[in-house]
Image (cartoon, rainbow, N blue to C red; front, side, top):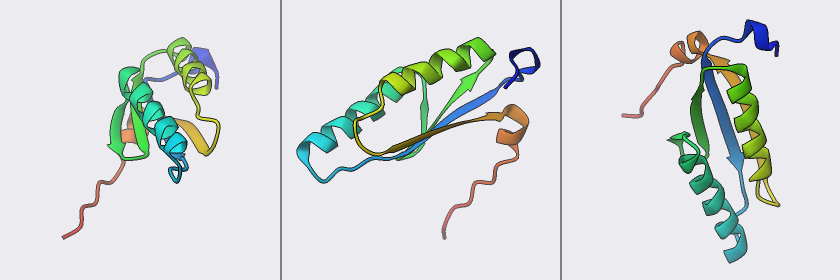
Length: 94
C-alpha cells in the first residue's frame, strides 16, 4: 500500500484461536484483551476493527498485532477504506 495515496479507513483483525486447553484459552483471552486495550472495537467475537487515519498509524498497529499474536492459531489483518466499510451489509436473523 502506498502511504502517499492512503485514505482513512479501518484495520480489521480476524482470528481463529484454539481454546481446548487452559493455556490456549488464556492466550486467546489475552489477545482479545490486547485488541480492546489497543483501541479495537469488537464487531463479532473473533472480528475486531480499528479506525486508521494515517499510513504510519496503520503500520504501527500492524506491528503491535504481530507482536501480540498467540503461539497457536490463525490471525489475519486487512485494511478497508472508509467507503468500503460503509458499503458493508449488517444482516440479523429473525
